[in-house]
Image (cartoon, rainbow, N blue to C red; front, top):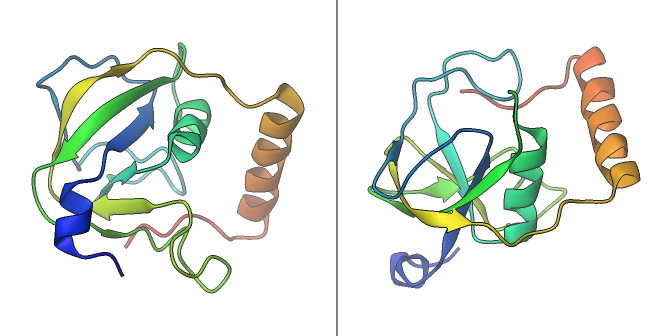
Length: 138
């Protein structure tokens, strides 16, 4: 587990399709991009650009995916969707919080996953959904 000090030195990203500006707050309470699309109790961020790219590519909505550099305004915890027994130690450095994230800026130079890899991920998520296995939305 990383200490609060180590996390405070970390650069964080949030992938989405929302059009945001520096200073905007990303807050819980909106429809989730995953699972049953319930109102999200948590919001998610990551310390890896690759995980943020997945977030931008898989987010629900129209328009291009966007990646923002964000800072948490309160405590964060490991994302249980990505840190179960399959991924011990949180290799994607993915976290969640019930507290807003402040947008610091937009990351404009990034490359999405190859179409075959993106389609395979979408197919896998749909297959899991059909099996009743969806994102944790506690």
